[in-house]
Length: 132
Image 1 (spheres, rainbow, N blue to C red):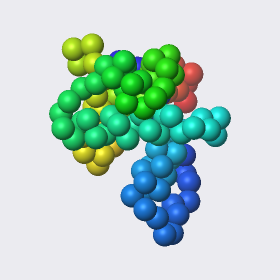
Image 2: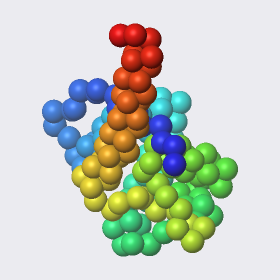
Image 3: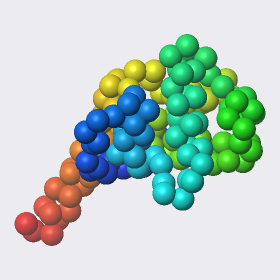
Image 4: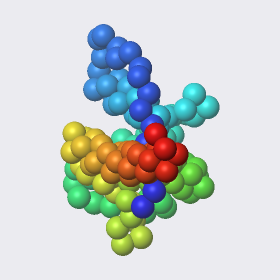
């Protein structure tokens, strides 16, 4: 499985609500873009988080209906969330990989570490072949 993991260092707001914290969390992972004026990806993330807490995967049609979005918009954002390893499919439905955000980050870190270690070993081998 290939993941695109983005970590952006963004200053955390001082006084926040849970909603602000979740927005900062997602922005720090590069999930939400400035172009998403109606915050549809953020709303989708929140809906998936709630569903994961109930261990209830949702279809793209269910998500579109709940959020008042087109199915195409939902699928676009789901694909982005799947690309970074946050969302998985389960019986043709979607769910966060883990309902606990801390555990989700730990799994994403393992994905990153695995990819990093492969690159590191390849760089070591190339340096060896280059005579360094």
